Image (cartoon, rainbow, N blue to C red; front, side, top):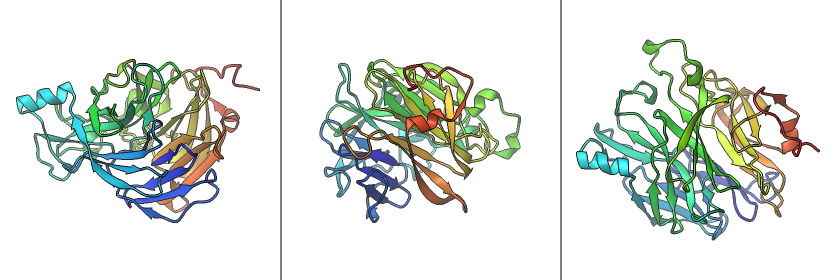
Length: 366
């Protein structure tokens, strides 16, 4: 996980270890490890632009709570929160088809909520839902099969959770309009709409189901919201963005996403392995200048082994201004042997290669 506090402090979290490191000088130097209660399957960090608080939400262990920092990540406290299910979840509960459980139970006929490998949350800046906190999440039924091999009724659905009271109460959004989706990212566009980008498990995991992958099984899923993240519409399968890291079986990988703070424009940056359903290598970034409709340029960041990634944009008026930060798993000794930070700017990406879909607008180039 990677986030940037209101004062420009970078926060990098290794959630399977509960370790956090801070950088107050735009990633040049990093603090010693701070132990935090943020664990695997907790949400990514959500920076509350209203208060400056930073939160991570836990929903998967039967003890719904938020881990909160009021000092840009130096210290943390825990508090109880309330999770409000969406209409579909209420229907499943009333019918007794799917009841909410916990991650560790594995009881069939139940599901659990989590936000494992979500990207950073956002605070809405526009429209009637201004001030709302959002972060991507997952509705995950218990099943014996891998997410890619599940039967109807047991599919995973990406979704979001949002709060209008500073993080005390969280509403689950309607499900993403495509099943077999999970780890995702969202950003607010300059007109108040939301863009959502999700991993897909449309391939297969069990090698006994081996087959040639369809082109759509190697690509990212996208959707948009016009109501502050309550519903997701206009499902699209990207023509450009790969769902890298499926080891040839097309079950995708968590990618990074951020919007650059350019007023009146929607410059988005996406990161993932540029392998289209294949091996986990070739960490790459893509740029969009129309809110995710097209992605005309990309640039390779790291050629060798890599895995999950996370992106943030530097804040104006801080040491991080103008920079883009990419945290990713990978190193010379393997995909999970190290975590690295790359720093670059938009001009560096523009010197990459054309994707053939869309154009870099004239207002971008000097």
